Length: 315
Image (cartoon, rainbow, N blue to C red; front, top):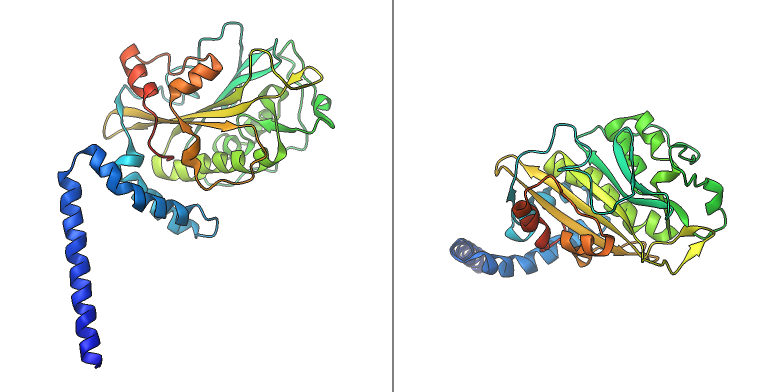
């Protein structure tokens, strides 16, 4: 009886290997759209495992690399020169909105709208780091370079967190304590509901600072709020954003080009979401809702190619 069971298991194992081999042959032979169709169910399973919050980090890292090898996650690389060495913002700060004050800080920069008042965008670069951050500063400070001079007290009892645009942790581990302290300037702050600030948005920030850096090395990030022409909600003079966005890019040395993914997240009480792909949009969509022009130093053709393509899945 045991011999029969072992023989059956042997045949089943051999059949499984044959099926895997056949699938591999089919995968290699089919076109890009066919590959994406085959990858979908497998990546859905991978996502459930790596995003469940309990999978060991080492396993998550291995699954990230498995996903990166797929056409669906890898996406398209647009031919481009390397970004300037040490640049905070790959291929130039966002353009398209006249009148913004450019605030250059250690480790990040901000496009600030004194009339709003608030940041329209913040840009920062992350790179391999030790993961050790200095102690978190205890207080936010008015940015005396601005004419708006927003005070931290203006947020008191507003019902909203002082939401960092350039994040405290990522700037701290990559650029040091002085740079971290500058992320607590009020020019780097927008109102965020607490669940989003401490939940989904923080998860995205940590994903970039840890997992993206481990996978891609240097990563360039631009983030910001979405404001309607006439914001529906304000507390005092501070407008409440309708949504938040992030445009993330990395340069591929092997393929001599850049690729990007963009996220658009509604301003809602959202602690967690394992399906980050639901927030993926094209860079063109972010330009539409913000009035900004990303990657202005790229050629028009490279910009169009990079910005029009929505990534198939979250990185």
